Length: 506
Figure 1 (spheres, rainbow, N blue to C red):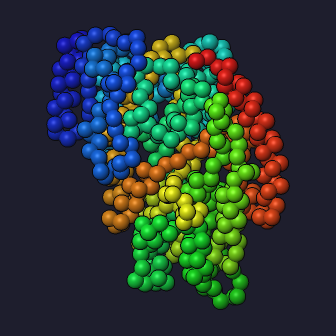
Figure 2 (cartoon, rainbow, N blue to C red):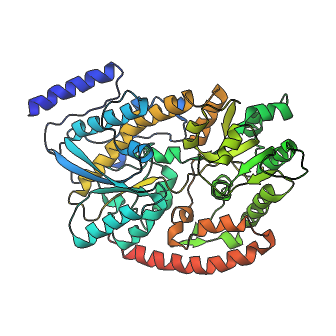
Figure 3 (spheres, rainbow, N blue to C red):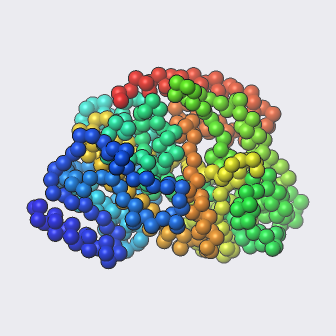
């Protein structure tokens, strides 16, 4: 058996030379080191570099070469709603489609490298729901039945299970190296309290990249109204702020049907929905929900932060003043509002990276840009992701948590080297974007992902993040009292959350 594996490893190594998407390691013995990878052996990688500046295939992880887990089965529970969520976990065959092929070969490579067997267990549920997966996790862990090793689920909806003792503390396990570029550094930082962290995200799940909030803009409309200027120059000159977006949007409004009313048949600067606008701009404007005190405890600062109310006022003005924005209620892709942008009725349109696939047949050229900054004093551009992307947790009932940790590190590093570039460089940058400037902008956006502690844990604090969806709609003069009332509830829930967190096993 050992000889067969060595022959296979040689063949896989040959595939690397030939350009195939494979990576393997030696599997001579069953070996689980007792201690974690030391700081001295951790590779120092500049995670601020864009994808285009780094040869990802040359960035290696620190997993020992002699790991051999003797065919151990890794049971991975995940959401399954079809191609979107299936794709990030497994592909049945090498279909020839670039991302499917990369995922298929990644899984083969990790199985060979660690001598394990991946058993994906899909739960058919809506992309916006994690209830079914959460139910199975709770039933398995509380009954002691040990049905699964790892769960991948809707990020926001899986956070409440962390304080219920359902997950293992990732900081206490071997092999996981969260300083590596395949982990979402800001996400991991904001989930770590008292040196405990129970969820992970990064290149291990393609949905994080696909869920990144962005603005699409119609290049034809922009060039018609602002000839001789460049949207990219506005961004690169650090003047892409909410006020600038409102100025451009006001300029391009046109009463196309001539009825002297602003309606869905007119041309607007911004085709908006409240959810994407509020959530996306909370991240892009770097609205800070919490700070950390000397004891390491997070506490809310929203009410004391002047930026909070400046944010509410500016977003409210963008949405409701001067016919610059058309607001729609649906957030789906196959809807009239999306078709409205495709048909050329709006300059700006909010969505995520995933939406690019739906615009490939749009007649007018379009570009991708970040959501704007709050003001020119803001230090840089920030980007956040829709809170429904997949985060991963190793269950507290897992019999071999260190093996599961090694699997997650190998899957994430292999995804970083091959799966992400397959989606990012080929499926997104080459297939969907239409010019080098847009491709460079995607690089910039990808490198600016930001996650606030309370944004990630919003479900634990009475959906405090979603409160802003209401605040930016209502009269801004009522925002202070509405937020104060919300903070009373959310702050009490935060105190209770921290008490539960401290009691969790290390």
